[in-house]
Length: 208
Image 1 (cartoon, one colour):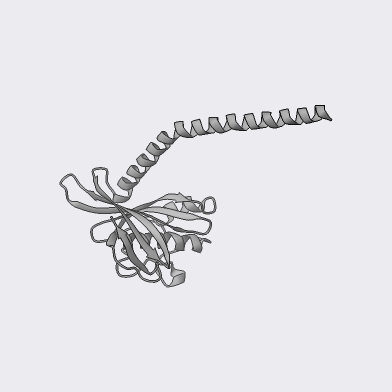
Image 2 (cartoon, rainbow, N blue to C red; image 1 turned 30 degrees about the vertical axis):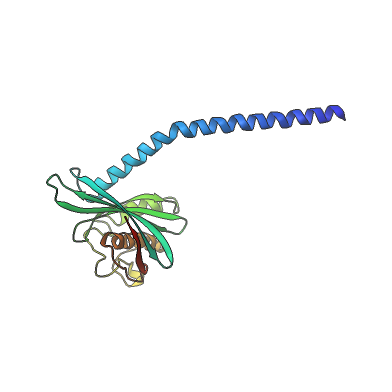
């Protein structure tokens, strides 16, 4: 019996030792990869801003973090203000996140000074596999759900099923609603004014 206890103790100590070593290795790997991952994310955002603003020759002159409340929940938006080489205002690219069917949908939307949509890209989506990629194309210019050139200024963008004029992604109305809600809320943050109840009743909480 004593021999069995000794073997069990040795097994426990070995497992603990292995766990500590593996934990140390994982921590080291995380530390080593943290920098490159952050740089990659920054580059992806920089490329995204150029894409949604429709041009390579632009400069981000300010990054405002705005917290607004929609339907009793706070959302954080980052507004990247841009200008061209002659220092003319080009508008802004806005990071906006809202809840989709499965998880958060994060989009980057470009607006010109008049509030018209210049472009958009999906930064993050945990929707059903394929839907995120489809949303990245579906609402682009020339596609069935085209939102480019439209403005949520007078009324929020809505799918036809809700009385709007935007074609929802086939068999994915919930994802389409989530996407358009993120766009409408992005405009609200950009324009810094209240949005219609369909996109979420809102009030500004912070602007820095």
